[in-house]
Length: 453
Ligand code: P5A
Image (cartoon, rainbow, N blue to C red; front, top):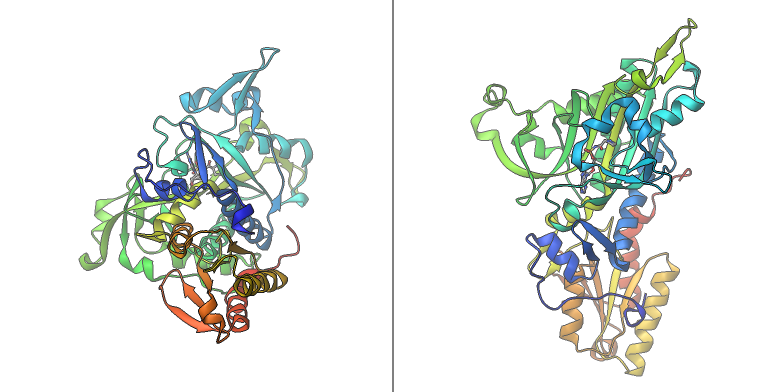
């Protein structure tokens, strides 16, 4: 993309309404625009990152064998009357009447709807296990929408639902989700720690939240510091292997890590004092096992091997896709702006032309831009007629991990500069070397291919 033709409405001043850094930087970098409290338009660069996050989620869900689909945002109230949640959900649920005076609601989550789909089409234990998911907008009329996309009213969630014959099978689905979530967050450049939590309005007493530690997080958390040493890395997991998934769950949940809702001082006191930590965290996902809470009242049963009808065991599993943008920025920024992890960056590399209009500099930039694109990379070329300082400030603000700076002086010896946004370190390289380096850096990011998307 050439910046002169893009739509990147960068703000010079800090917006007054933003209380936390991610909100401020998302507004300043022209990623979002608030339309009313907790409801945002996603401007092109914000939308691009949102898409990158969705892509990682889709790839990792496919890897775990989960099946994508799409349910609507508006739901009939009657489904929620069947589960009893129409009354329970309270004012957080946006209720709507259509022209025929039928009660609808803007879905805050989809347990009822997916259970309805299941009961309409699945009748035998032979069709299990089954895990369906979608990435769809949700609405929760939060009392205090704040911090930009962190606590929105309309927000994008990946929500998945497993259907299993037995509790054991459903717990394997739970573990499979835990593993796939660990992988997903790490690919986004985040450490998200699973912590024992509370079921809230979704239900069930077996649930973990995934928390990214950050001072601005809304949740208070208590944990054993050893847990922050754990990384999933690039280990290969067989998602059908019950013992393998169980071992990962045990590894990542055996140390003390709880949100304030489930915090237990007596158990916490058993952690050696020097390892006890209290901090704040951003909840970027949550997984639940709730058994037959929805399948029983809604009649979602299957015929078992002995011919008897049994309600299916279910769980649901959510990733806060739009909230993740805020969480990633909270964890990756400095005084100058955002520092995108390579896995989610809106553009892979920025090209800064120090002397726009100079024939040889323009030609060198054009050639680098074309070659990067030919290699499957997505560069942002700052071809505006601006001074170098302004171009650097914009690049630092929007936070692309790598920058290639091209000027007439360097070109006399066939050199450009390759700069890391994170370390600030600059290397002088030939254009070809710089391109090869960028291609090599992104190889693992671009190399992920999964057949079923
Ligand atoms: C699991 C999937 C559920 O709704 N039902 C379907 C279950 N879980 S949850 O924990 O309530 O939400 C899942 C994730 O969505 C994000 N989230 C939000 N993001 C932005 N603004 C909000 N108001 C908001 N509320 C929830 C969180 O990341 C949460 O973990």
